[in-house]
Length: 181
Ligand code: 5GP
Image 1 (cartoon, rainbow, N blue to C red):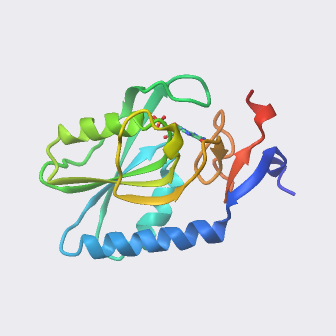
Image 2 (cartoon, rainbow, N blue to C red):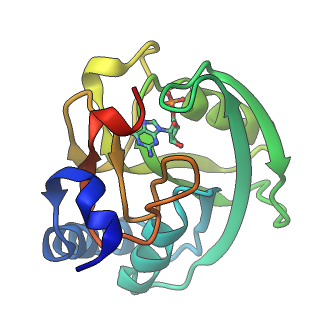
């Protein structure tokens, strides 16, 4: 048995559920952007697996770039103070941009990212988030594509970490509270 599985109290979404939803999102995005070549901007590190799977579910041409941010706060909550650690390389002015984010908690990181990317004058800027915790929002951030809404619990797996671990779990699960409290 995978040693990391012992640290999980419950599996929220297994591989099948995740892939099924991502295929639906891929189809929706492909239909909405026909005739355009959107730039998908993955937010590192948590969004790397989501972006890799979503990109392969999209059937129109796309370009891919990454933005790496770090937010300052405790290990399991965000303070909203964001620092850019790796900037985008593609010139997005006049382009259709879709931000690919792993999870929205307070919404402060995504609000910052949207403000930052609008300064580069894209033609359009949409957001696609795999997980949303509506009860945790501290700002009225909105998104265009969403995978699943979840309760206000700390989750890991499928790109999401705790202290850099668990990103390679193929499912999304709740981390046992005693491991971080
Ligand atoms: P926000 O600024 O919306 O509060 O936080 C967004 C970032 O906090 C996410 O991109 C992610 O890195 C981290 N985060 C928020 N909730 C969780 C969670 O339940 N699990 C993990 N692993 N990271 C989370």
